[in-house]
Length: 247
Image 1 (cartoon, rainbow, N blue to C red):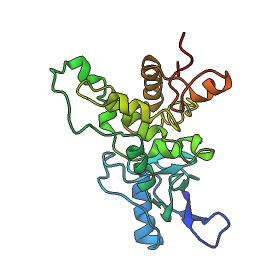
Image 2 (image 1 turned 30 degrees about the horizontal axis):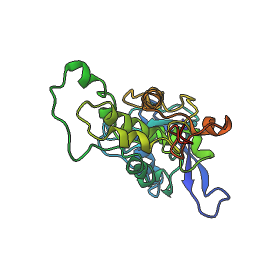
Image 3 (image 1 turned 180 degrees about the horizontal axis):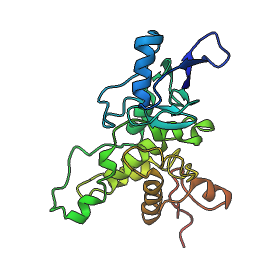
Image 4 (image 1 turned 45 degrees about the horizontal axis):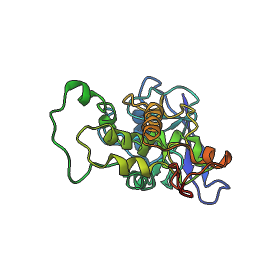
């Protein structure tokens, strides 16, 4: 079985070089294969792993152009392995995920300091059950094609987390969180669905972004580019501007 790994190579035109490795055992996970390569064939190969059970998300990488967890993916002959996209490659298959995490802060994707304490029903609890299961693997961030044209896009990683708090009945700063995702956020998403199948825990960022758009509409927001195109009276944040002469 042959595996091709994109290795860190500053001298190469794109900063990486494809190296082929021959393995005897084809019945193993990608993580097991990488460990075999490192221990038996090439000790310089670099990659991350931790729990080995699909829980921590640290071994996320791309196989044949699709984001996977190395500890759960079964390797196939001819697979091409490469690091996640849109993040600085530290070495080989290791990336700096800090750039993905910074978008959580920009999207105010965190709980408020002060929260309401109503009685939460089972139905209300389930509204953000999946979003709360995020393992921070950044696979959706890597899969998103919008970053190819807009590096400031908040992205599915931060937007689905924003919805996790917006949909929480205990949240006291919903208006702030909705206002934060209007620019480089929910309206910039193309709803291409690339982020959905790569999530290892079944979160659907596209659906969450649609819900954020719906919530934004209820609160008086609309797509800023649409408001600009039709020449309507809208403020810089996308909300309707009803200012004008008094009658």
